Amino acid sequence: MIDILQIVPLRPEVQKELETRYRVHGMADFDRVASIVRGCVTNGHSGPAREMIDRMPRLEIIGSVSVGHDGIPVEYARSRGIAVCNTPDVLNDDVADLAIALMIMTARRLVVTDRYVRSGRWPREGEHPLANRASRKRVGILGMGRIGKEIGKRAEAMNNTVAYHSRRPVADVSYKHYPDLVALAKDSDFLVVIIPSTPQTRKIVSRAVIEALGPTGILVNVARGAVVDEDALVEALTGGKLGGAGLDVFVNEPQVPEVLFGMDNVVLQPHAASATHETRRAMSQLVLDNLDARFAGRPLLTEVK
Image (cartoon, rainbow, N blue to C red; front, side, top):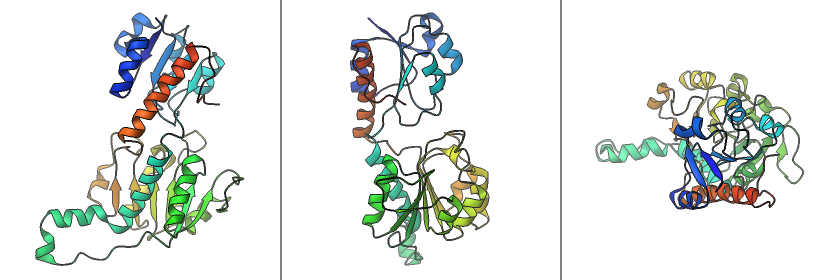
């Protein structure tokens, strides 16, 4: 039976299948089994680091139960002949749905108005102050990959005007392409961030971008915390230089800047964009399917290139 190192769990029904097909070891067993494991189950930010890879001479595949792989040294693994697989596509709808939900929740202040009703203030204080609409606005999307396209479809269906920034224009996309991110932010009511976290994209949503979005603009981040200058974001929200933010991700998760907790113009989520039963099961299944393919000598389904 093939030995697998498991850093993160899969969904229970898929975990059972994993344990039926493979000899699974947890991180507590790493020192004992490092020399024999041939596969590793992880996610995009939990490794394994280079030092761990060096201690696993028989490792053939790293299966990540996420799309992002910023916590895995992909190029180094590839140089050692180790395939890295992720879980694209199966979570596109859920992430796009949450991006749009954060747009609506932040603009319409749905968390605040929910609290207003639950606290019994409505009968005592009357109608809640007006909010802002989330339709017929300008939506800028940072990143126009699979999920960016799904966000664009949803935003367009709400009668929004959609534009985007990426390193180069995307061939099959009709939305206006902005070569300059600051210019896109300046021309947007919402800026939705959905790009991978890489050294090149770290803090790409800079102070200049945030301030260009402006005191009525809303930033939505369903990508990674590292792609936004979080200090600049907090300062802009505190100082009234940004209208609001819908945030699913943060720099030092699960730690979130506490100053955000008291802000009524901010909606916070616990990195939950793909957190539905259906999608998390599909993601887990894809990890298992890639392991099975590797050890059966079949082509991998979703190898990171």
